Image 1 (cartoon, one colour):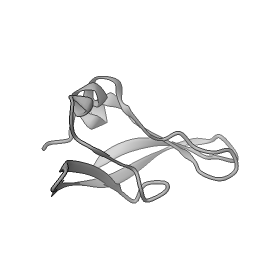
Image 2: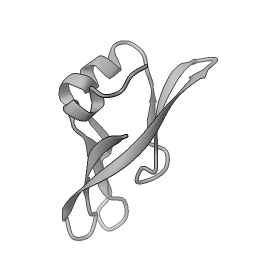
Image 3: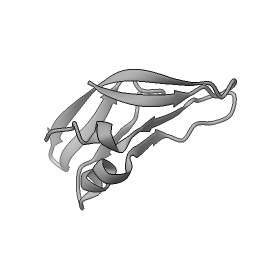
Image 4: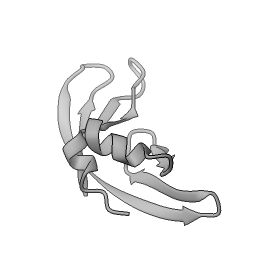
Length: 84
């Protein structure tokens, strides 16, 4: 489990959410995917040091769309918990 900061797309109210994640190995490489994210599609291929950068700066899993999709940010200290 990792924690994210969810910003409501309508009210802009921030809340902390707990999220599960999985790492899947595919023919194209390893994929990090949130389970229960805002859109259900928050994921990325782990390559070229991107996970290391996210462990340093955090990950904006969903930048949000006003009145539609909420913003979801995973802080660096939470991304540091990801083990591959």
